[in-house]
Image 1 (tube, rainbow, N blue to C red):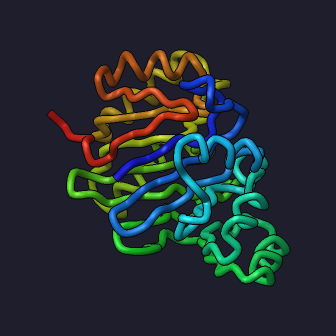
Image 2: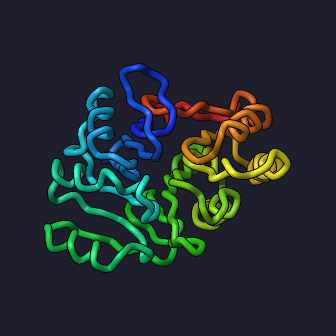
Image 3: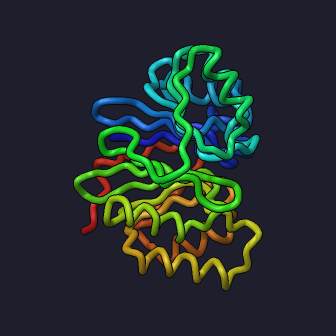
Length: 238
């Protein structure tokens, strides 16, 4: 089980291009998933190729919410994988859904919390924007992947806990780049109190949040950045 950060504002390698947005590629024992597509398909596919990945191998694309920096690479992805099943929320344009279906895609439209596949849940469309998070059950605890956490990262973790029990790890944009330090400290401590052991705040989290989360979580803070590969199977509470 591995998670590849394929698109992020920062990069860990000169070979991987940073750009505003977020996307990941997730290798699971029986399938590969893509989560969001960043803001630019050419950059996404080039980054993926540098990391030894191809959109043609994905078995499903999970789109968190309909903002440009998370769906900008959609056309490039489905050009490589023209029958790729897509899971999105009811906040997406019905015209987009109809167009994708006319192109031959199975499109799953989510409103309520939903079991997508064995061990894979959607939190359901949350908040005014109708954002969903991806919840991956593992024997060690659940993993929550979010795009921007517009509904609030703490609220999304709590929803994930309602679905699967304990959440071990949260990764993605925590939408704290406009927040003051006091608020960020509160969020970090609240996540710790919810039982999280590991976090990777990326994209719209902001540099101040990364510094504070590193202090609160210590060794449980895993840096993000495009090009990062996270061995999910090795995450364990010591």
